[in-house]
Image 1 (cartoon, one colour):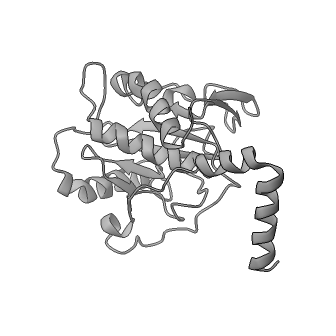
Image 2: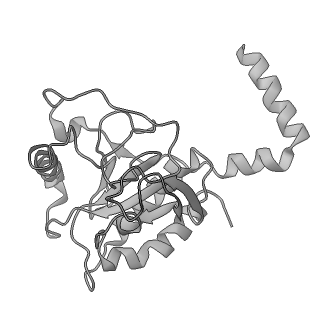
Length: 230
Protein backbone atom coordinates (compact mmCIF):
# COMPACT_ATOMS: atom_id res chain seq x y z
CA UNK A 1 0.00 0.00 0.00
CA UNK A 2 1.39 3.41 -0.94
CA UNK A 3 1.57 6.37 1.44
CA UNK A 4 -0.98 8.15 -0.76
CA UNK A 5 -3.50 5.34 -0.40
CA UNK A 6 -2.97 5.31 3.37
CA UNK A 7 -3.75 9.03 3.44
CA UNK A 8 -6.87 8.47 1.33
CA UNK A 9 -8.04 5.72 3.69
CA UNK A 10 -7.44 7.93 6.73
CA UNK A 11 -9.41 10.80 5.20
CA UNK A 12 -12.23 8.42 4.32
CA UNK A 13 -12.27 7.07 7.88
CA UNK A 14 -12.42 10.57 9.31
CA UNK A 15 -15.32 11.44 7.00
CA UNK A 16 -17.30 8.28 7.74
CA UNK A 17 -16.44 8.06 11.47
CA UNK A 18 -15.45 11.57 12.58
CA UNK A 19 -16.10 10.97 16.28
CA UNK A 20 -14.08 7.75 16.40
CA UNK A 21 -11.18 9.29 14.46
CA UNK A 22 -11.08 12.33 16.72
CA UNK A 23 -11.27 10.13 19.83
CA UNK A 24 -8.34 8.00 18.66
CA UNK A 25 -6.23 11.09 18.08
CA UNK A 26 -7.05 12.53 21.50
CA UNK A 27 -6.19 9.36 23.36
CA UNK A 28 -2.63 9.13 22.11
CA UNK A 29 -0.65 10.75 24.92
CA UNK A 30 2.76 12.21 24.05
CA UNK A 31 5.80 10.07 24.72
CA UNK A 32 7.67 11.35 27.79
CA UNK A 33 11.44 11.68 27.83
CA UNK A 34 12.97 8.27 28.51
CA UNK A 35 16.67 7.86 29.31
CA UNK A 36 18.05 4.93 27.26
CA UNK A 37 19.59 1.78 28.72
CA UNK A 38 23.03 2.86 27.59
CA UNK A 39 22.98 5.51 30.35
CA UNK A 40 23.18 2.81 33.02
CA UNK A 41 24.58 -0.26 31.24
CA UNK A 42 27.70 1.50 30.00
CA UNK A 43 26.98 0.39 26.44
CA UNK A 44 25.70 -3.15 26.89
CA UNK A 45 25.62 -6.22 29.11
CA UNK A 46 27.61 -9.34 28.19
CA UNK A 47 25.62 -12.43 27.29
CA UNK A 48 22.27 -10.66 27.14
CA UNK A 49 19.67 -12.80 25.29
CA UNK A 50 17.34 -11.55 22.60
CA UNK A 51 14.20 -9.88 23.99
CA UNK A 52 10.76 -11.47 23.71
CA UNK A 53 7.67 -9.59 22.57
CA UNK A 54 3.90 -9.69 22.94
CA UNK A 55 1.40 -8.26 20.46
CA UNK A 56 0.68 -5.15 22.56
CA UNK A 57 0.67 -3.74 26.09
CA UNK A 58 -2.79 -3.44 27.63
CA UNK A 59 -1.82 -2.95 31.29
CA UNK A 60 1.02 -1.61 33.39
CA UNK A 61 2.02 -2.82 36.85
CA UNK A 62 3.51 -0.32 39.28
CA UNK A 63 6.28 -1.52 41.63
CA UNK A 64 8.74 -0.10 44.09
CA UNK A 65 12.32 -1.36 44.18
CA UNK A 66 12.39 -1.76 47.98
CA UNK A 67 15.66 0.16 48.10
CA UNK A 68 16.75 3.32 50.00
CA UNK A 69 14.85 6.55 49.32
CA UNK A 70 17.65 8.97 50.10
CA UNK A 71 19.77 8.99 46.98
CA UNK A 72 21.24 11.55 44.66
CA UNK A 73 19.43 11.38 41.33
CA UNK A 74 22.78 11.67 39.58
CA UNK A 75 23.63 8.29 41.13
CA UNK A 76 20.59 6.50 39.69
CA UNK A 77 22.48 4.73 36.84
CA UNK A 78 24.64 3.01 39.46
CA UNK A 79 21.52 2.10 41.48
CA UNK A 80 19.89 0.53 38.41
CA UNK A 81 23.05 -1.44 37.65
CA UNK A 82 22.95 -2.81 41.20
CA UNK A 83 19.28 -3.76 40.83
CA UNK A 84 20.04 -5.44 37.52
CA UNK A 85 22.96 -7.37 39.01
CA UNK A 86 20.76 -8.57 41.85
CA UNK A 87 17.98 -9.78 39.60
CA UNK A 88 20.36 -11.52 37.22
CA UNK A 89 22.63 -12.93 39.91
CA UNK A 90 20.24 -13.81 42.73
CA UNK A 91 17.08 -14.56 40.79
CA UNK A 92 18.80 -15.96 37.69
CA UNK A 93 16.82 -13.72 35.34
CA UNK A 94 18.21 -12.93 31.90
CA UNK A 95 17.81 -9.14 32.28
CA UNK A 96 16.38 -6.61 34.67
CA UNK A 97 12.70 -7.44 35.12
CA UNK A 98 11.19 -3.94 34.93
CA UNK A 99 10.49 -2.35 31.57
CA UNK A 100 10.94 1.13 33.06
CA UNK A 101 12.25 2.71 36.24
CA UNK A 102 11.38 6.15 37.63
CA UNK A 103 13.49 8.05 40.15
CA UNK A 104 12.43 10.56 42.81
CA UNK A 105 13.32 13.46 40.50
CA UNK A 106 10.85 12.22 37.89
CA UNK A 107 13.40 10.87 35.42
CA UNK A 108 12.25 7.81 33.47
CA UNK A 109 14.81 5.14 32.55
CA UNK A 110 14.51 2.34 30.02
CA UNK A 111 14.89 -0.94 31.89
CA UNK A 112 14.54 -4.29 30.14
CA UNK A 113 16.04 -4.43 26.65
CA UNK A 114 13.96 -4.53 23.49
CA UNK A 115 12.84 -0.99 22.71
CA UNK A 116 10.61 1.34 24.73
CA UNK A 117 7.93 1.58 22.04
CA UNK A 118 7.68 -2.17 21.56
CA UNK A 119 5.63 -4.60 23.73
CA UNK A 120 8.62 -6.21 25.46
CA UNK A 121 7.77 -9.15 27.71
CA UNK A 122 9.13 -8.33 31.16
CA UNK A 123 9.77 -10.29 34.36
CA UNK A 124 8.07 -8.03 36.87
CA UNK A 125 4.75 -9.66 37.92
CA UNK A 126 4.72 -13.44 38.10
CA UNK A 127 1.76 -14.75 36.12
CA UNK A 128 1.10 -11.45 34.40
CA UNK A 129 4.19 -10.52 32.42
CA UNK A 130 2.47 -10.99 29.07
CA UNK A 131 0.81 -7.97 27.45
CA UNK A 132 1.91 -5.79 30.35
CA UNK A 133 4.75 -3.43 31.24
CA UNK A 134 6.40 -3.01 34.61
CA UNK A 135 7.14 0.47 35.97
CA UNK A 136 9.34 0.53 39.08
CA UNK A 137 9.52 3.51 41.43
CA UNK A 138 13.05 3.62 42.82
CA UNK A 139 12.69 3.59 46.59
CA UNK A 140 10.52 2.07 49.34
CA UNK A 141 7.02 3.48 49.76
CA UNK A 142 5.48 1.81 52.76
CA UNK A 143 2.76 3.49 54.84
CA UNK A 144 3.58 7.06 55.83
CA UNK A 145 6.51 7.48 53.44
CA UNK A 146 6.17 10.58 51.23
CA UNK A 147 6.03 9.82 47.50
CA UNK A 148 7.64 12.61 45.45
CA UNK A 149 5.22 14.47 43.18
CA UNK A 150 7.74 14.37 40.34
CA UNK A 151 7.75 10.58 40.56
CA UNK A 152 3.96 10.18 40.42
CA UNK A 153 3.74 12.66 37.54
CA UNK A 154 6.33 10.67 35.61
CA UNK A 155 4.52 7.38 36.26
CA UNK A 156 1.26 8.93 35.04
CA UNK A 157 2.89 10.31 31.88
CA UNK A 158 4.59 7.01 31.10
CA UNK A 159 1.43 4.96 31.68
CA UNK A 160 -0.66 7.38 29.62
CA UNK A 161 1.70 7.06 26.68
CA UNK A 162 2.27 3.30 26.89
CA UNK A 163 -1.41 2.42 27.35
CA UNK A 164 -2.45 4.96 24.74
CA UNK A 165 -0.55 2.99 22.10
CA UNK A 166 -3.24 0.31 22.53
CA UNK A 167 -6.09 2.78 23.14
CA UNK A 168 -6.47 1.69 26.77
CA UNK A 169 -8.10 4.01 29.30
CA UNK A 170 -5.90 3.88 32.47
CA UNK A 171 -9.03 4.00 34.66
CA UNK A 172 -10.57 0.81 33.24
CA UNK A 173 -10.01 -2.87 33.85
CA UNK A 174 -8.61 -5.25 31.24
CA UNK A 175 -8.71 -8.99 30.72
CA UNK A 176 -5.44 -10.74 31.53
CA UNK A 177 -4.69 -14.46 31.69
CA UNK A 178 -2.55 -15.85 34.49
CA UNK A 179 0.42 -17.86 33.29
CA UNK A 180 1.36 -19.19 36.74
CA UNK A 181 -0.47 -20.71 39.67
CA UNK A 182 2.05 -18.94 41.91
CA UNK A 183 0.27 -15.67 41.18
CA UNK A 184 -2.95 -14.74 42.98
CA UNK A 185 -4.84 -16.75 40.37
CA UNK A 186 -4.56 -20.28 39.05
CA UNK A 187 -2.75 -20.86 35.79
CA UNK A 188 -5.00 -20.19 32.81
CA UNK A 189 -7.48 -18.10 34.76
CA UNK A 190 -8.82 -15.07 32.89
CA UNK A 191 -9.22 -12.17 35.29
CA UNK A 192 -10.14 -8.50 35.11
CA UNK A 193 -7.40 -6.32 36.59
CA UNK A 194 -6.82 -2.56 36.56
CA UNK A 195 -5.13 -1.31 33.42
CA UNK A 196 -2.89 0.67 35.74
CA UNK A 197 -2.35 -1.88 38.49
CA UNK A 198 -0.29 -2.37 41.62
CA UNK A 199 2.06 -5.35 41.73
CA UNK A 200 -0.05 -6.69 44.60
CA UNK A 201 -3.09 -6.85 42.30
CA UNK A 202 -1.54 -9.87 40.61
CA UNK A 203 0.84 -11.34 43.17
CA UNK A 204 0.94 -11.88 46.95
CA UNK A 205 3.12 -8.94 47.93
CA UNK A 206 2.86 -5.52 49.57
CA UNK A 207 4.58 -3.94 46.54
CA UNK A 208 4.49 -1.06 45.61
CA UNK A 209 3.96 -0.19 49.26
CA UNK A 210 0.91 1.27 50.97
CA UNK A 211 1.89 4.90 50.33
CA UNK A 212 2.32 4.51 46.57
CA UNK A 213 -0.66 2.14 46.25
CA UNK A 214 -2.89 4.77 47.86
CA UNK A 215 -1.93 7.23 45.12
CA UNK A 216 -2.79 4.94 42.21
CA UNK A 217 -6.39 6.21 41.80
CA UNK A 218 -5.06 9.75 41.38
CA UNK A 219 -2.32 8.52 39.03
CA UNK A 220 -4.96 6.78 36.90
CA UNK A 221 -6.98 9.98 36.68
CA UNK A 222 -3.89 11.98 35.78
CA UNK A 223 -2.92 9.47 33.08
CA UNK A 224 -6.44 9.55 31.61
CA UNK A 225 -6.27 13.36 31.56
CA UNK A 226 -2.96 13.21 29.69
CA UNK A 227 -4.66 10.98 27.11
CA UNK A 228 -7.30 13.67 26.60
CA UNK A 229 -10.05 11.69 28.30
CA UNK A 230 -12.75 13.23 30.49
